[in-house]
Amino acid sequence: MELTGQSFIASKRGAGSPAFYGINPLTGAQLEPGYAEASAEEIARAVQLAAEAAAPFAAISGRERAAFLRRIAANIDAVAEPLVERAHAESGLSLPRLTGETARTTGQLRLFATLLEEGSWLRARIDTALPDRKPMARPALRSVLRPLGPVVVFGASNFPLAFSTAGGDTAAVLAAGCPVIVKAHPAHPATSEIVATAIQQAVADAGLPEGVFSLLYSAGNGLGKTLVLHPAVQAVAFTGSQRGGRALMDLAASRPQPIPCFAEMSSVNPLFILPELLAADPEGFAQNLFASFTLGAGQFCTKPGLIFWTKLPGSDAFLAHLKKLVDEATPQPLLAPGIARAYEQLTVERATQSTRAAAAKPQGNAPFCHAEPQLFSTTLAEFEAQSKLAEEIFGPTTLLIECPDLASYVRAASGLEGQLTATLFGTEADLAAQPELIAVLATKAGRVIVNAFPTGVEVSSAMVHGGPYPAASDARFTSVGTRAIDRFVRPVCYQSLPDALLPAELQDANPLGILRLIDGTETRAALS
Ligand code: NAP
Image (cartoon, rainbow, N blue to C red):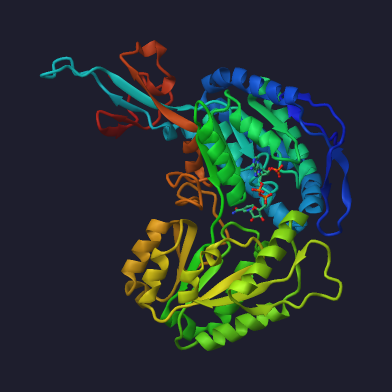
């Protein structure tokens, strides 16, 4: 496929000369072609076309939108090989990881298609009229979820496929019936171009209004700010740093018409080791923990970053083995030079705030953009005294927190900020002894996990990938799984509207055969 280095302004390509390049983090090589930044006119045109597409796109049936999502998935499958190769060159992530991520990307598009085909996600509710009710009659009320309008999606650096151009946010936005304008992440511009070509082709083949999809390039903050402040934009979806997410949340709230900004930002994913676990297999547990916090060079929002433990049988062997694994590790490639610089700076700072318990020996000539796995250690008292220790360091590192006793786990959990995940490792008896800890963690995290590491997020109906701030901007929603669609719809109630003018989901005959709540009872039956 020929790469042009230009933005996608609906069905057209942008203009302009190269302003930035992808960089191969494994070699430092600059990758061709260069990418032009979207001009003010191009940004305005993309948003205008998205606004024009909003009503016609909202009006098509769920089945047509499902077919559109399946077309995108098929088009991505058709370019999977060059796509994975390019994503590897731009991110340094391994080919098997990126092959799996491609399957996850198309899998989540197809999962949303299945949701739309079934249709009940729209939560149609009908309260029939009660003309004889005393003292007042009740009108006929019917409500259903409707799309918000154009949404801006920020591609994430750490998932160049599954959380970028056609990733989970874009899939949820399109499934909801909203046009999308993607701000490509500058670390993987060509990967974004290949996927955008697949989406643009699907828009054309499905005969949809061209403004349903645009993708814009820029290497600076200006584009994102302009998009979030544009009056036609109705919501924002973001995955990245707390600083970036918070800036966009504040911008979205500062508009004359404030809009929701769904930001998935920062989580340190506390993990609590309960007493009987370590006694059984301390070295095996150390091995699995090491594998989890160094997986993908620790560049996962669900990396376990805080490990709470207390002195018990097995803990010495656990610590000794974990330190050995970190000492013997080799430097790992990070996604981009900026992320490598942040890792270097934050781990140097952390060494002044806690004890560096172990660190991989840098290779003689540590390659460009690589990170040395590092293990830090502190006490609960020091952790509570220094709020900086609770902040995320993106990369292959974690912090051990020694607690005076098991009873102090509840205090430690109570002091934590909002998290994507919280994990407990222990036997059944251990868990039965910790009801208060489990209850506290459920107030802190979107997902409470038992005896499994948090890295690895299933894309499914029940998944929750979100949590109280700063894990996410709005704890009521998830950014992974089919519930992610709820971010881009709002309930609309139609009062006494004639049947023929109602959306199909609310018509008496229930032509779509969906599950509806009629006068308080769930049913697929027509309304007689
Ligand atoms: P980022 O710096 O937050 O940037 C993500 C996207 O948001 C980029 O497209 C960026 O645009 C844009 N952006 C950031 N701040 C903005 C602002 N103030 N106004 C407008 N747009 C803004 O994240 P990143 O580049 O992926 O990685 C940097 C750090 O983010 C990492 O070191 C890590 O700490 C964190 N991170 C966390 C997660 C997680 O899931 N928790 C995931 C990825 C990254 P430009 O780059 O064009 O400015």
